[in-house]
Length: 90
Image (cartoon, rainbow, N blue to C red):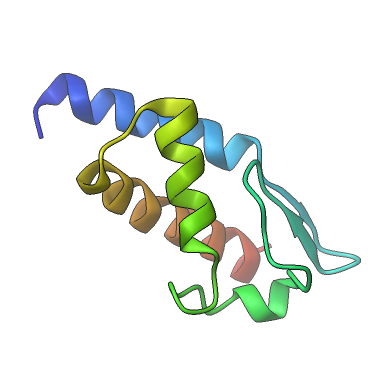
């Protein structure tokens, strides 16, 4: 990926993180893309494609940001690490 592409993808990650709300008291998370019904923080501590609705994330990134599959994989990896860090280090 080139530098302009990385700058754009980092902005996408920034927007996704900004639009993700974490309610530590009720242990719930709200994202700009659909989640499964029982999105509790303790369940999301171990983000993995099998636990997380990767399809919804992919669709959202393609429609809203026009990302390719390769770009989505990068954004997904960075996004889930940031959210995981926010959950564990509240």
